[in-house]
Amino acid sequence: MIFLARPSRPESELLRVVTPLLQEANLLADHYNAPSVSFSEHTLAEGVFLKQAGLSPYAGSQCRVQPLLLAVLQHFQGRLWAVRLLCVAADVLMAALLQSVGGLVADPSTGSIMAVVYLISPLSPLASNSDFSASIESALTMVAVFLAAVQEVHAAALAAAACILMFPLHLLLLVPLTLLVANGPEDLSAGRGSAQHWAMETMASACTVQNLEPSMGLMWYMSAAGFKEHAGLTRLLPIGASGLVTLPLAGVMSHRPMLLMCVQLVVTSIFRPHPSSCHLALYLALLLPYWPLASAHMPSKFFMGQSLAVILLLQPAMWHQWIVRRAANPNFYFATTLLYAAWQVLFLLQLLRAVIHADLDASRRSTDHEVTTMKRTDSARSTPS
Image (cartoon, rainbow, N blue to C red):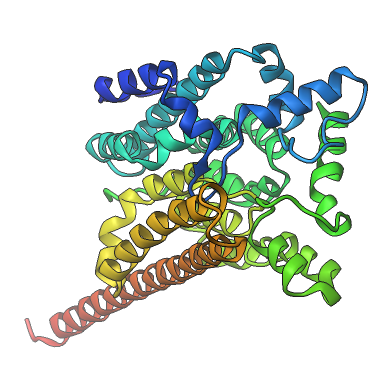
């Protein structure tokens, strides 16, 4: 039986319900969403207008809403508060799923801590109020993880298909999801046509469109600004590189399917063309049960935390200087996206290092225990009765 825990912070849920109704919430919809430009109602309006005119919703310059989500959100056009409430519902669902998954991986108290950390994190309300697609996409990803963890094969496959429709690179999550269904989580206590059209319009545009929008993403910006002579190759790199580590990591971490899922989420976040704070909040909350493992083998915990705080403060400052004050050029803003990507790469390397060291220590302790047991057995046999 599937059991879905209820988030244990009703005041946080109330805050998320009230915030979208306030006039000040419009500031989040039109401005910055760490760590990339937000997806506002203007992009939704453009997609709906083009679709109603019989054109592709992606023929314009702004819309990047997935077809599955566009079919739902077009009914809420002009009622931004309803769209925000939908994101709030996805946000609360995320907390409930985190609490349930934490209970499966560790214990109920750890699950409650994961839900509370996600709810009180400043990253998640920022995303739920300013980035419509990221909150719903992350909720679908978490639904797939939860269903795979409880080994509901058919429901997990359906949720995974919805995730792939939302973001094609989620195809890489099928490997850790398969391991989750097959092995269960590690115990730490002990619309085809429209989707294909969207994928071709949005993903292929990285290799064909010369003038990309300012929020085109880290690698695509590099290809457009710094490597013009090899633009086609460098635009393909983010898509190809994100799949290089999937199978090797699946072989190394097959005994830790939930941790493999977290690592794959970090990888897809690094190469995502439109990163959002919601993705950062998701994998940091999922990694909470592994904090004892990471703290024992990660040498730069203080540096990683402080550097992330500095980057998240620099991002809106550079955006404000570029767009609002017009006192800087876009290179200042994209320099912070480079820093954020470098931070994620360093965090991923430190996490993998901690996992490998923990596994080596466990293997060494197991070997020492076996050797000690054998010596005691031999000593007992050699002792005359």
